[in-house]
Image 1 (cartoon, rainbow, N blue to C red):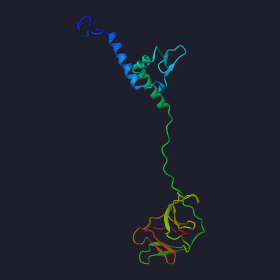
Image 2 (tube, rainbow, N blue to C red; image 1 turned 30 degrees about the horizontal axis):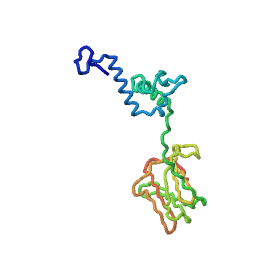
Image 3 (tube, one colour; image 1 turned 45 degrees about the vertical axis):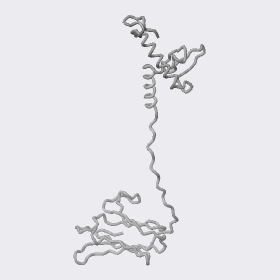
Image 4 (cartoon, one colour; image 1 turned 180 degrees about the vertical axis):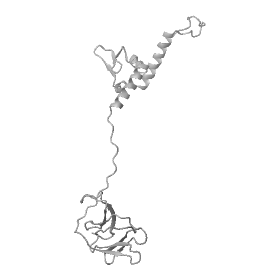
Length: 222
């Protein structure tokens, strides 16, 4: 573009361009840049209509040639509409469910029935402290398996109506069914008076539960 005859310019050099000329020059540079970097075949908003001109389906504008459309895509209006469209699509996208944790597969085995057991009531002759000694027989226990036990509150179990006066002591070992005993809901003495022993030779599991000393009402052991 020849600017040498414009006011403020010197002969043989570029003159001062008007705002309109600067805009034309800017659009031309944007068009050239877009031609080098944009593939119109992949532009979802580029469309050639039935009269041979080009349309921007996003901004609803008409363009005489591809260069004009490409210059439009670099302008503020098209970029602002792209940002609004992206924000709208993101807000309408349903929330993805949180990734699920890997499920722990429950080990399955054929149960052969309940184990034999024996419960002995004990009382310390000196202090009068009460205890229970459990003996559970597992003659056909699976190799490499040791019996397990745990306490269950009356509100955790679903077989009997919950009663805060009682708790349950469960014993489990494959391939036997889990068995439970209803015992008083009293604080357990976790000193050396609470102990377990698994005799691998006789296949017998022993557990002694001693209760801390307190005033007792008459209760029944199950």
